[in-house]
Length: 401
Image (tube, rainbow, N blue to C red; front, side):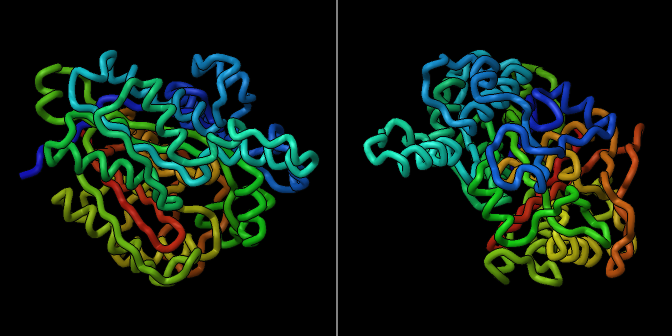
C-alpha cells in the first residue's frame, strides 16, 4: 500500500492577495481580482479585463528579497515568493535535512522579458544581449526557485498547458509514495504577457465583461497571473516531526480525450476519466466528495464539457460546485496550484467558495454552482479539476486528516 502524502505548507500570490492570509480574506469576502489592465502596455487595455497582481517587478523583487540588479523574469519572482511562503508555513528551514524535490509548472516562462527585448531589438538590431532573454525558458523559473529555496535533490519543470501545476502535484505525490523523495515543493507559476493576451484574444475566447463560469450567457475566460505551491511530506517525516498538517493528497487522475487542439470533447470524456481515476486512487465513492473546485473557465466549450462530465459521474447528486477563476481569472500553468491552495483552505476553514458573476442557469445542465460563501460546511474531501489544451485533464482529491 502506498504511503500517505500529507500537506504541511502552502504559499500563494495572486490578484486577490500577496500571501495566504490576504487570499483567504478575499475569498471569504467574495472579493474578485479581475479589473482593468494597469501594468501591461496593451492596445486592448481599455477593453479586455485581466486579473493582475498590482505590483511592479521592482516591488516583487523586494518581496522576494532578490537583488535589484539581478535579471529575473516576473514568473520567477512570483514563484519565489509563493514557494518561500509554503516552506515557511511548513516550518522547513533546512531543505537538505531530507530528500527534497521541486516540481514546478509554467506555460509562458520568462516571456515577459522576451517581449520587452523584442520591442527594443526591432528598433535597434544592435540592442541584442543574450542576458535579456536567457530567462525565456520555462526551466529558468524553476531553477531560480530551486536556487533561492536551496533545493537540489530533484528539480524538474512540467508544462501541460492549464493542467501543468495539477500534474506537478500529482508527480510530487507519486515520488513520495514510491520512496524517491521525502518532501516535495509542488505547484506552478505564470505571469500575464502580451503573448497570452493576444493569443487568447485571437481565439475569440476572452470575455470583455469578465468571466462568468457556468452561466448561460458566459462568453469566455479572463486571464490572470499568480503562483502557488504546496509542501508535500511523507507519512514517516510527519510522524517524526509531529508538525501541523493541512490535509492529504488522497487521489489523483490524469486522462486525455485527444479530441481537439484547444477544445474539450462535448461529453467531457477526458474530464470524466480523470475524475473517475482520482476517486479510484482515493478509494472513495462519488458521494464522499463534499466540494468540487471546477476548472470552470467561463468558455462556451469548457463549462458545458466539464458540466456534462460532472453529471455523468455524480448523476443527480452533484455536490456543491464552483469555479474560483471568477476570483483570480485563469492563471494558466499556475491554475492547478492556486486552486489546490483554495481546496486546502476550504478543508482547513470548512468553507465552500462562491462562483462569482453567476446569474443564469445553463440550459444543458441540471446543477447550479454555489453563488454565496458557505461557512461551517462539512468539507472532508475536495475534488479539484484542471483541464488543459490538447485534452490533458487532471483531477486531484484533497482530504481532511
